Length: 248
Figure 1 (spheres, rainbow, N blue to C red):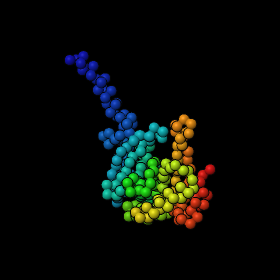
Figure 2 (cartoon, rainbow, N blue to C red):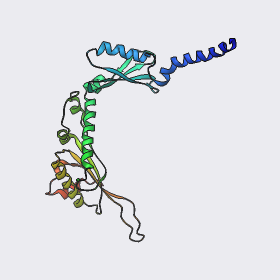
Figure 3 (cartoon, rainbow, N blue to C red):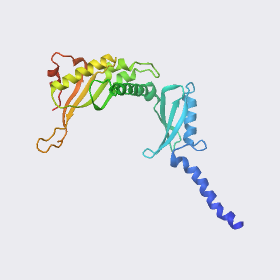
Figure 4 (cartoon, rainbow, N blue to C red):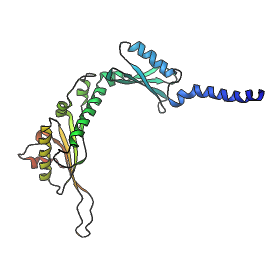
């Protein structure tokens, strides 16, 4: 028994050191690690009036610090990061002003709302032509992002008129401005009927011609109509406007 006690002692010491070092190794709070305690005290001092909770704590190898995720159970747009120094045990960076008050979280939420809506329309069997690898983006600029109110209600269908962007890849037999113009008109008419707005579109037509000698498919060829404005999609003179937007 005496020998067993001395044999277990080094193991117990090693386990104690492992438990003490575990937060630094994994970035996870253990027994209310210093990073967790620092974040908790900081929130109590600076954001006592907000409904906030401490989420994941990760270790940043590059910066040698902890990144503490802060979120609000009652506010979808309230989540930010506290950077806690591993040596100072103090908050060295707080992203609340940028992420929450600066509108970035709200812009990100609206981005995904718009993309989800665009995906549902592009994937609908009623869409007027076949396409692949297509998507919609809501790209709000810095000024519009800064004016967003956290948890504010916004209609992404309306926002799309000034910040919505579509990219469509369409396999066609002919790579011509005429073909692209017909597709753009069909796109506009369909999206108008669905009350879906966009500001501009990139339309990429592509084909893989068949080699007349071997009968095999050749290399893919493309015609790229880039940055075509919704306001410019109307029948009169459309082919000429499309031609001006074809990337060389």
